[in-house]
Length: 115
Length: 111
Image (cartoon, rainbow over all chains, first blue to last red; front, side, top):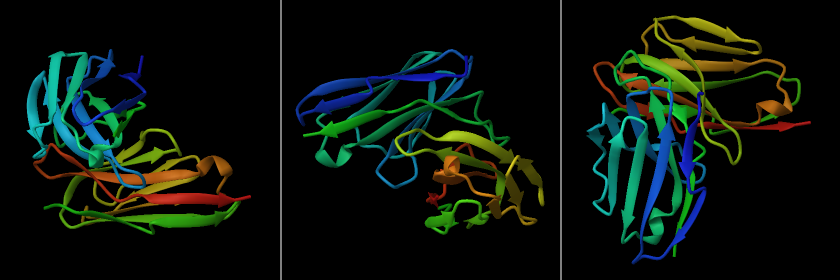
């Protein structure tokens, strides 16, 4: 199974709402990532987890809160978002971290609209 | 910080023609990866290059890593409508865990 799943596919939320994005993989990968992608732009790294510990936070605002409950699951908790946070949120996983560079498997993404 | 640039941003290709997209990094890379994202889809891994001067082929796609490990290219021959999408290069800086994506080349194929 080389699939990364993400739920929900689409999410519309108000600026005062709290919601969560979920990501799951069963490939035994020990590195998991959250990316944000705006239209016609490359994926922009937000967070990296390695062995369930936060390894990289790319100075993301605190209204985004990641969580890695176990090696297969990755959540992104959203609170008090702004309209400019509307984007495609991609989850990815790879065998592990390192400059040897393991390929990343991306999920289909959650298209988020903040109203 | 590390920057990865891709040119061209857009490539309109007649079906059956060849084209090349280029990727340049401001710093030496330990490896370079290429991804393809179809319209409405998510990035899908194509290949990774690690060695200086490395060349790899996948059917009609030829990938090259520069001698200085700061640039790469993707050449597609006999373009087909299935080649439509955005091609991203992405590199790991030496001694870094972060994969930095180039801006992408958006390919449109005219039948």
